[in-house]
Structure formats: C-alpha cells, structure tokens
Length: 314
Length: 255
Image (cartoon, rainbow over all chains, first blue to last red; front, side):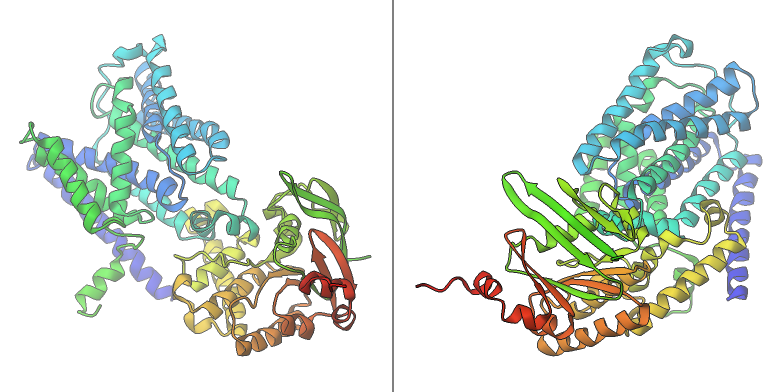
C-alpha cells in the first residue's frame, strides 16, 4: 500500500517534470513559436477555468453561469497590485485569488439557496453586475480597460498555476470533503439528512472555484497586455461552461481534455473565419448527440487506466 | 426522562391539516411503530422530526433539547438518522462511498489536511474506510462495495439505506416503510435484521410500516395515526382489538 503510493507519486512527479522541461526547452530554443505559445497559454488558462468551474457545476451540481465575473475580479485585482502599486507578480496572484474568493463568498451565500435554473439566472446576473461595475470605475479606466500590463505570465508560472489548480481540485474531490460535495449533487435532501451542512459545502466549492477563476484571470491579464470589462462578458462564462459540459459533469480529467480540445479547435478554426462559428457549433452538437454525458461522463482518466491499456486487459 | 417527547405538534399545508395535536413519547431502547392508513400523516411526522419541515406549533424534545427550528444536519448530529420511503441513495456513487458520506460529520481530518495530503488524511481515510466496511459486513453488502448504488437490486438498496443511516452513529433510527416492496421472505429477514441492529448498536427505533406482520412482529408499542391525529396507542395486542383502529382501516359498521 505504502509502496504503491510512493511509486504512483514519483511517476506523477516525473511525468510533470518531463512535461515542464520539454516545453521550457522548446520555448528557450525558439522551436515553439509565438503562435503556439499563445495557444499554449490559452490552453493552460482554459484548463484552470474549466477545472475550477467543474468543481461547482460538475461535482457540486450547482449551475453557475458567472464564472467570467470571478475571472474579471482576479484579473483586475492582480493588475491593480502589480501594475498600479508595483508589487511583485506573486502578490498580484495572491490578491487575485483573495479578491475572487471573497467575491465568490459574497455572491455564493445568498444565491446558493436557489436551485437549478434560478441559481443559473442569479449567477448570470452577478457576473454581469461585476462587469458593469468595472465599466463604471474610473480608477480602472472604465470601459476602455487597462493597457500596457507587464507580461509576467511565463511558462513556469503558468505551469505552476495549472498544476496547483488540478492538484487542489483532485485532492479535494478525493477526500471526505469531496464526497460531501458530491453527495449534494446526488441528492441534496438525503445529504442534509445524513449530517452534511449542504449550504456550507456549496459555498466552499463556490469559493474555491472562484479563487482559481481569479488566478486564471491574473494569468490572462499578465499575458495579453490588456484587460477590459467586455472581455469577461457572459459569452466567456458560456465558453467555460461548454468545456465543463463537453468534458463530462463530474470529471476533472474530462474538463482538462475538453479545455485542451476546445482551445485547439478554436485555434484550428481560425483559418476558416467565415464558417468558424458554424463548424464550432456543429462539432459541439455532434459530440452532444453521440456522448450526451460528455467525453468522459463522470469517469476519470488516470495512470491506472493507461496501465490497464498497456498490459492489454480492460 | 423519555428519549424523545413530542407535544402539541401541528403542521398544515395550506388548508390541509397534515398533523393535528400530535403527542408522542419514546423511551430509550424502545421499538415503536407508527401505523395508519395512507395519507394519515405518518411521513409528515418523520419529516417534522428530522427537520425537513418546520412545524407550525409544538415541541420535539430529544435528549432534553428542542429539535424544532434546527437544520436537518444538526438534528442528524444530535443522533437522529432516517431512511426514506422512496429510496434516496446517492445513485451514481459506489456502495462504499454512500456509507462513507454518512461518516463525514465526524471527519477526523481538516480541509487543509485533505488538500495537502498530510499523514492525518491517510490515517483518517483508513479509519473511515474500516468503519464503513464494518457496517457493510454486518449487512452482507461488503462484497458489493464497489458497485454503484443504482445497480443494486431493490432489497439491497433498502438495506444500504439502513446501513447509511447507521453510519451516522445515531441513537434514534427512524425507518420509513423499510419493507415496502419486499416479498414475505425478505420481510422476515428484515425483521430479524431490525432486532439485530437494535441489540448490536443499542438503538431506539421508530418505524412506519404497512406490513402488519412486520409491525406486529417487532414493535413493542404502537401509535395509530389517522387524519393527522393519534387515535390509539398501546401494545400490538391492544391495537389489534381497538375498535377505533378497525374503523379507521376498514370503515364503520353500518347500522
């Protein structure tokens, strides 16, 4: 048991180290050009967003449509800290997480009493409130947004943030706290009667999800030079939701795979500007017809799965 | 002092009085049945005790504390656990996880331990798993621990519900029609199981049931509910010959 755990842990560390060094090598030698670097960055940011939203929508079963709002809070908080107050990047990231987490708490406590469609509408409205509020704050230049943000999001930061998000999400889900969260999705009344404070755990999942959305926002702001409220509109929330649903509600690996595929698909479809959205929609419809439970359903892909395929038995 | 004492409980839904001046008491280690025709308000009483509904009036004193107004999870923490008339398992989770969730209220490690995977986490998880397996073994569900709850046969789903309720380590176990949909042999087994768990876990059990052989077989005292009111109370023998109970079930005799 102990030995197996050690082997699993070291395999994971080795895979991550190899992945990290490989990409770092490709970037320093210039083999990965600007275009691929931008896509890689989007991919990582989307993974963070999808994994964090999957915690709320997929595992807790609470339909939230305001994820871009938390991303905006994180982006603005980090830019204020780094760009306007001249603190280091790490301070900006922490501020982003804290501010977005706080926003998640303030929004979560009243809205998470609602269920299903009502919660979706309330979170959608809150996302829009955040955006409109930012548009009206002169300190952050209103609708024009903030320009000339230092490019601080480098591959090590990005890689670290992505791994951290996945690690926290996976460790949380595979614990007693995670089981409590999942039980809310399965049957809220039964969960409450089995001694689980469902409101507390809904808010917990919501706050953690919001914190990582904030982290993604900070990463985004410090890579693309410019942020404006319009970037974080309802459509952005919807994009993230599509990734979660496509990956499978209740699967972290599903969310990761969907985030990677959708980012790659969007990039590939750039070459057909006229029919881009039609193709995108068509692909989503086809996937949903043939895999209504999402690419992964609520299953997870793990090293064990690969091990099974490797040894040839299923 | 009684383990649970309910006095003057009222609950109405709009114009319908579901529970009317309900008075009830239960002693430690008793096995009490609540019977009555369909729609008499039995499940409503259970929902009032466990906090799903708030009563309009009255008090539910459990171990000297009033449960009225407490959230269901707090009531569960006080030591009241229940099963459901229409099975409410966590369907997409395994049998083992269903039981583990019920143990969450006493989770031995913190959230940070879980995220950072400290030794406390691994020790705590082992402890939870052993405890859950202990319950599953008693109910002969240990071999099915990795099956999804929804894939179990009906009788086993009912059993799993009881296991899950027991895993919250209650003092009072409330069973809402545990034998519904079971054949006579399964009911017989269930009766033995109910007696077994009562002795093994020192439980006080309150149950609703329509199957008279089960009610008369295991219960020590019965309450009969009709139109939201208690119409009779007593031992199974007394209830069997009570004229008001016969009327409630079969209707009045025509002169």
